[in-house]
Image (cartoon, rainbow, N blue to C red; front, side):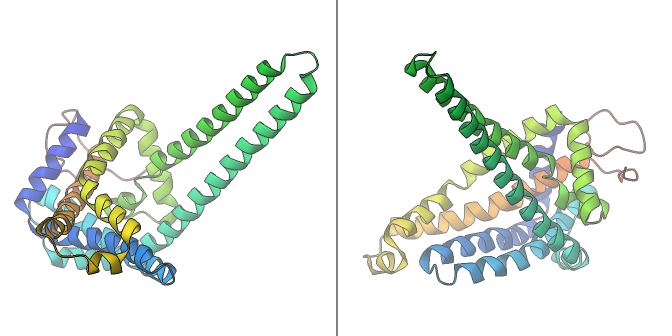
Length: 288
């Protein structure tokens, strides 16, 4: 099964290439700093997030390049990280901006359609209220509103699942900005049951790994950095912060390696290879 095999590939590559942990630290610390600075000083949050937006494409491009080399050739280095990040930076930056714009626009449209449906239902219910008991009208309106919200959520999740491999398509297959999204949608469409299973498992496992980080963010949100620093230091606080950094680093390195390994396994091979448990060492065939 490609899903479980990809998780195994990720562990094998990470164990054989500790350099992936260094690259993973860039992803983890960059994400943490952007969130923490937004909490500590909201006035600079937009600048911090903009900075991370500009840096993230280089970091993720470099990491996927390293992970790909580790999966296919068993060894990789930070030199590969820099080379891959630099090579794919512009396309990844443009694709990330396009991704954010598309997702934001899709969410807005889905919400507007859901609200419009709710308003229409409410108006029709009021018109029919003379012939139908008020309790029935209220229940029917409530059900339609909830159904509209759920449909909007499902539509957004479906979009996220469909285009989730655009970064991998750019780095692994050297796709352009728009072709990377088309490639991701095509790969997901051909492997829909497997991709849904992978997405659910990946999201659950990632949430478990991010628990220490979320705990730290929650503490900062509640007390603020000044109050936390003013508190009497405790061993538990230091351990919690250190654990958050270590777990976030290992988690980022592992799960992005798994993400890369899974995408490689979904690609068609030149030779017939139905055994998904074999390492994906063959180059993918030309893209659609």
